[in-house]
Amino acid sequence: MTSSGRFDRYGEWMTRNSVRGLLLGVALSASTALSAGSALADSLSTAMEKAYSTNPTLNSARAGQRATDEQVPQALSGWRPDVTVNGTLMTSDTQKSEHVEDGDVNIVLTQPLFRGFRTVEGTKAAEARVDAGRQNLLQVEQEVLFNVVQAYMDVYAGRQLVALQKQNVAALQGQLKASNERFAVGEITRTDVAQSRASLAAAKTQLVTAETNLATSVATYMQMTGDEPGKLNYPKYNKVPKSLKSALQIAGETNPQILAQAFVEAAANFDVNVARGSLLPEAYLQARAGVSDTFGDKTTIIKNGKPVQVGIDPLRSTSLSANITIPLYSNGGSVYSSVRQAKQLASQRRIQVIEGARAVRKAVAEAWNAYVAYADIIANAKTQVSAAQLALSGVQQEYQAGTRTTLDVLNAQRDLVVAKTTLVNAEKNRVVASYQLMAAIGHLTANDLNLNVAIYDPSENYNRVRNKWFGSDVETVE
Image 1 (cartoon, rainbow, N blue to C red):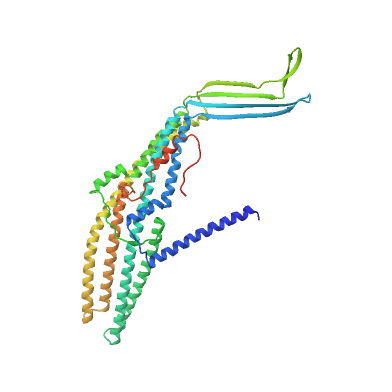
Image 2: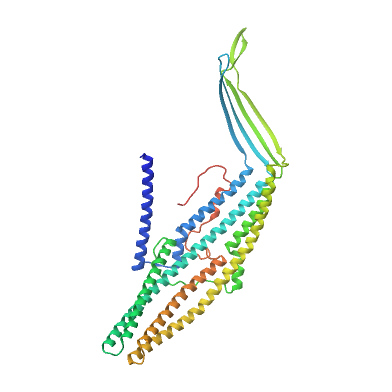
């Protein structure tokens, strides 16, 4: 095995084991978070700040936007000169057994003057795509932050549901013990005991399910933020628009999906002019400077009355020319096809703007209605919990008095658990709906939320590379 082969296998082993180590670390952290929790408290804002600074999905999108920025200097290169150096060295032997070496070097500078407006329109198209990319980056930012909200609330609610199921198991264990005691003295039948045992088994299953769901939520939280969840606090409701009409109006002005599609449409319109530019004349200046020499060549001159052989000076030349090209019919008509294609793509982009606006309108309406509906659900759930708690207390007292059956107590206990579960989920879902509404109108960004982070400014890289003529160094984030 070659040293290169050993290195490749070692690198592969290291990569594989690094991934295994990372996954093992995540699994252990999730297990720790599920069983013991952390002493530190995390607010929703803190969780979003972690994701904004470290989330790989968001960092990847930022790198993609920096790559999109390069389309502008590429388009601007159409204004810039092209400089080449050509050199030739040739050796030959003549019939007179003479060895001849010829060489020449030429420097050619070609400066475009007119390219059928392709550079102008191409630059506008590239700038529009950069603007579209910035809006898409905001959309990714919103998606990441919303996923953090969802993960945060899933963990918060999941912990409450686990605690609720544990309480339910403890209550049903007490009920089973009481049933066994009453069965032993003949107050109830074996059927009552079986009912208590069945309810306890079902409650244990629900507890396992709740713990499994919580473990999944913890893993998702860690995926989004990079850290295990500490002690989570119930967040305040996000500030939302006062009405659906107001929300729709804001979305039409600031939703990044709508704005990105509008910029994409603008770029497509410029692309039509770029394609049409190939049908127009093209003009450029060309400057050339060169030197050629036949090494070893000599000529005879008369010096002081005697013939003397001297070397021949290299031949130098310079030229400057203005050139114009007028296309009449080229490439078998493919240019005309390209223009037609660009027009159809521009038409498609215009239709997609309408499609995107309708999708956003639907998302805003859904989020708004959910936010309003969950307020009523929470109020009803609180009433339900209060009533179910009172009913359970009454049934238990009547059970002790012998006027209620074991099944009545079990049903009352189940109703209370259902009511509390409904309340927990409704409170979670209303918070999620409020942030979903903010995302739908385009206000779920670090800047809008006033997160305590250094706001990423995509214009910094753009300004750095826009007019850059030389160099291939870049600033990357791994």
